Length: 328
Image (tube, rainbow, N blue to C red; front, side, top):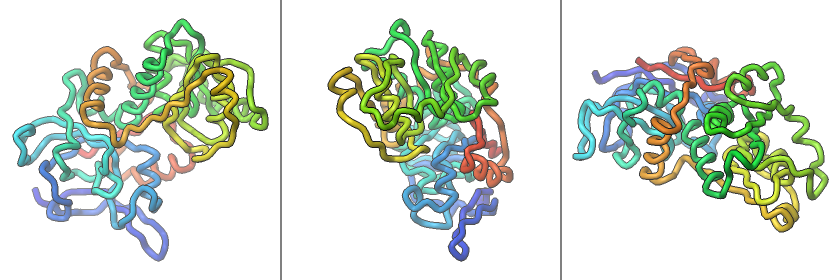
């Protein structure tokens, strides 16, 4: 098969238009591995790419999709053979390299991970970058000393992809989870994932003018950034940590050094894009065995044709949980 379907984002008179079109395998970039994509997933970064954000994707026409799971069609390296089931997340996939919203991708072998035995291709993309990021957050918090007996753990942006998986993962590990959201109608959804407390997002915005706030959280996963992030820092208990992995509320915050000096707290940065493949493999192994989750309640499945409408929904802050893209 030389032609395939892909979502292509084009720039037309200053606007960015998405449509499903036919592409040819010869259009794909150079790489050691050609993969037939079975599943992808929709992430906020994909929506930014599709809307022409030059901080994510510089060249158009372009096919987004930072996640992909599928079967190797051809490989020029010994480590991967035709028929191998593989997954990819991050690196340049879907940013400036044609991504998982196409039925075929061609990529460097150094980006490709064989599918963990405990996960199907479909399950791996329900997790995708969001699941990997949530796992990295929890792992880094525990490396910093967090344990379930220390008190409640806050998750901001809890109805989003990373947030919802973080809620489910922390709850499965025995943590008392407080889920913060601006979507009050989704309280039952978060409770079903394992949240013990629902926190209205507006309460996290109060007190931004103060250098310190009342101690509340033993730890936190922050997916939103901005002033909410620093209010979370100011609300950590002595020795607590927050894992920071998102910026939907802004990329900057203003605050003081008081929480760091007086409460010995930690701000932990999380990157899931450029992590060495061996680190990603370790997290995927945990997600496939010790940390395996039933995420059926938080996923909706769509086709390529339905992607443009879903991209508008995620940009409008209306998407909840995970959106799986079926390319088969």
